[in-house]
Length: 361
Image (cartoon, rainbow, N blue to C red; front, side, top):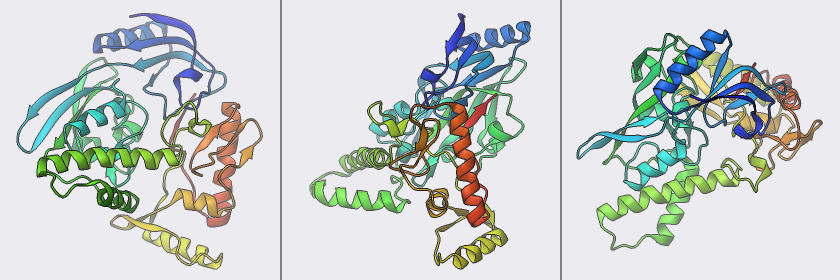
């Protein structure tokens, strides 16, 4: 285990922001992780876990303890039959590498999560989701190291997944560290076309490219890879796929989660919106007694437009108003802008936006 000193954190995050880590340790095995935790305990210093850096904001002053970057590799097939395949995947595997690997085998369950940055280990923490899919529906179990250094397996049920949340993010497992995730992916389920934007893109692509003579097995392979590519193209149009040539991708993707309101709160919101001249704002079913609003709609209709620039070298993406971006700024400027956006939405609609990325102390 190599302990490095004074490592710049900005290059390790998609925002390209943050100072230096006092200590930095690359974690490639569970043994590395155990030794790193012992080091932190012996030195009496705090630590944070870093994956792909797509959901992390470090302050300009950096981090005074140890940053442990998860790089545990491996995609291992545990079981495969006519219906499904089960994989155990190391926490350090880039998320989209695993999605591409699964899609190429014609496996359904995570195809609409293509193009999402970050690592496999982070996927259960916030229950990543996009275009009608959530990772919770494909996870069987999560292997973690608890604070004492013991490796424990947590079932899907015990993770208590909910919208962009889990027991790892805001529950009893917050101090536990994900080392691998086990997924069950389907060989027979149809690819996910729940999201209208994806369904429309697929229908157009299907009509223009599909031969009537294609076999069932060829159709599945064709459809899976086509949907993955269509999702990536949709994300690219919104600057939601990392691209060094696109400054709008220096972000955390969607900076705010879509607000979840009770039915009573939703009614109050609809009255407020109607009084402001908005007859049919987007409202989606979430769970019994709750509805989901569109954070993007709230931001744009609060008066904040795509491409808006703020003092301090930060701004709103030109392609998606949920993308708060670093142009040439600082973490302080980014967080000040985020608070201005939240204030603008609350003053107009009385709805609180919640940040999706985590700010490290």
